[in-house]
Image (cartoon, rainbow, N blue to C red; front, side):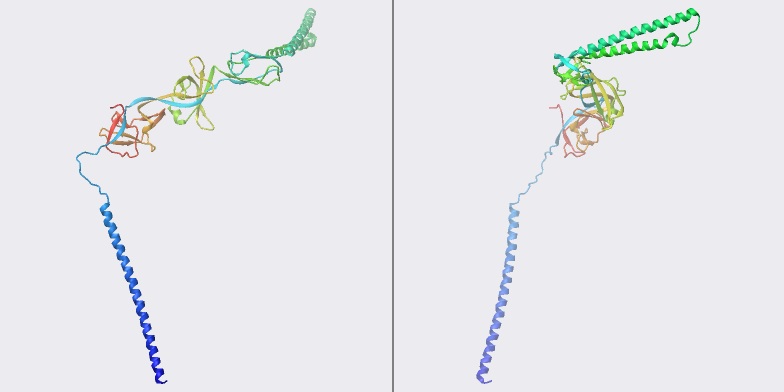
Length: 407
């Protein structure tokens, strides 16, 4: 290598080393700047957070607590004074009023309908024996005449048989001998003749009965609810003609649970009950005909049967849905409280003499309308009952009772 080449080589190495050093210096400077920028943002974030905390502490509402000599007002509670008394149990049951008799009157004989009475029109009230329809009678009158003729012939045959028997008996008595058998006295002929008369009489009665059945009458007093036959129509025996329901006697069937059955005063047969409408107005009275003895196979409840005699003083109609009030046993030491006083949990709240709340679980005897009859709890009477208990009530809480009726 000559001197010039050596000079060029040294220059190149120097330049390469200088460039490398510059690159390292530039990289180190960039990293330092990035770290400085990151710390700067951290410091700014902490500073901003501190400023927000200070700002919130200055604008936050503060509650000024100051002592007052005035006492905190007590919670007002609506209350009612309830006294201990003896209460007669009563059971309320809803039932449908049904007529004692309800029948679909059918034609007993067939024939042409020649008359339809106005009493057979739907809605008419009829009495027992009122004529409803008239069926043509000619065929049945002929049957009656034929039956009368047959009866006369049978009676004539009976007279002849009796005469033959009488003559035979006198002949054997005159001769002083005993008849050898019944044939000698013509007794079999006599019995046949007697049977012939009885048969003819029965046939005549049947013919007369069929003739009478051509006039269709009401079997009981009531109301016509439906008519199925028109004038001029031909009916067959057994065909329905009119529907009749009783308007003088009604029946009710009640179902009571085992608990309510135990509240009744037994025996209940013959007891009088109240019948009310849905508004609680008195409609009339009913008499218990029979009750108990068996349970309904579907509901497993006792069944009670009542009867109602319709009249001017009774406003009860067939098909009405009524409330029946049954009187029960007398229970001593009870409280009659409004149903609103019972909470969902089954508690009641009373107020003791110190105006503090007392929570009790009542022993319910029965319910009547919007009231509940319970056994009176142990303690001094009268009781002050919270009629509208609140969920915020606590045992022992001091309250300000407002007795109903006070100013």
